[in-house]
Length: 289
Length: 289
Image 1 (cartoon, chains in turn brown, blue):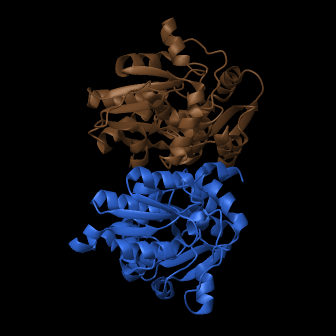
Image 2 (cartoon, helix red, strand yellow):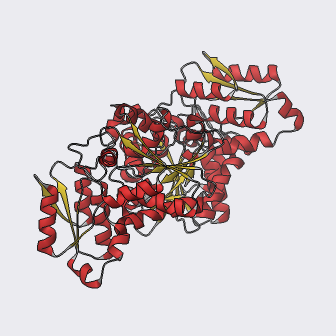
Image 3 (cartoon, chains in turn cyan, purple):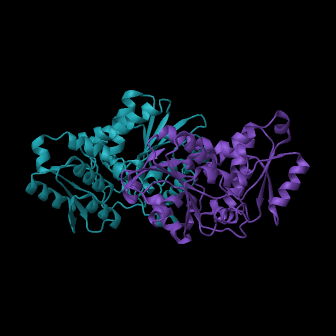
């Protein structure tokens, strides 16, 4: 938890950053990954785990498997960013690059291997693991008034919101989605999970094509407000995260700044605001646009 | 103090970052600035303080003066980076932009105002203030083996090295200068302070045209080794600081990484290395080169 005088001055409120970018593999994802893998039986561990992801979840599950000595297979789309592919390979996970239907491939391989699927968000053990970030926020910053969380498939906010609301119900919890990767908005409007046909954003860590019922239920129960930022607001906010926050986060991590800067979230000078800086795996060549 | 799994993997040693970029005004400079201003008599405080700098020291002294209610005049070269000029003005300091001889101007204005000059490095109170960073390194990381410090005029390393060597003499202290801004190397070769005719580096925070005898004396007494990095090594190291360290430092802050990556500093896998991330006031448009 880092107090940021620079972001406080910029945003006109008391800003603290929950700096998940410093986690192993550079994002919050290891929280849920470790919790899931550590919940397996001996027999399940022996058969291994499998995951699909284009990015942070892939690196997380590779790290978790290799660290715990659990056989781990990571399936990534063939077009995934090279440095993330390289990172998974370097950790020693079994890597499968997939053309075509990634989910169908991973389900088939799961059955062939007898492995346990570690889902990126649609799983109680993942949500419970991510909740540890919420517990730490309340422990480190008990005076917090507002917590702002970037939202992709909804795993992080499900855990963070539950942990905080159960401990301190008067805390305001706000989720932020990019307009071009808004699977939660679409699913809430439809009354249940619906697929996004082509989520795409500079905030690539939030471009989830689906969400889960467990995530929608947690958002309904524990999140005060969901806001949707414009795609154009992401890059300036990302630059402000670096220049004013001094944190080399990924674009997704700047979505809270974007929401405040574009007036979608109002903050007071006396308010204590925690921005969840969800990760730091970025290609900084994209900073300039 | 931030443990960095990313930089540890990159550099093949146990890396911790002393994250001075999160300081008020974005650099370590406020340490010496506050110590100097707080050492003044009532009468001296009433007459105010004055400083000259193109960058971080200017912002630091402006912040210190305004925070303590001491009249503060900051003299900056007319060609200084706009966002640093704007920052000084926004803090409420009296700003004087100077064409020509900056030091002559500030000496004349000091005499006219009866103000106390807060020097960027050549002053015992500045060195003592910066030493607080060294005290904190030893407190937070008592097992540290090696501390690597970026060096401009020598104020930071003077304080850090003294604090650490007096507390734990077997700690290795290494200073890093850019080859194109090497006033310490030149001065040590000459046997005393000599001016650098035109220091210029991507690591602009280290481009000091002079050093002080007190700084040379501290380096002689407390620093194990000074290394000089190539200018070409700065930008790749800066990018690695962001991508692997997840810290949006300024180029100067990456000089320790550059020195290790180019083989000028050897580190062992079992060694605990502290990189002093001296500041974070950068124009990130320069990342790409």
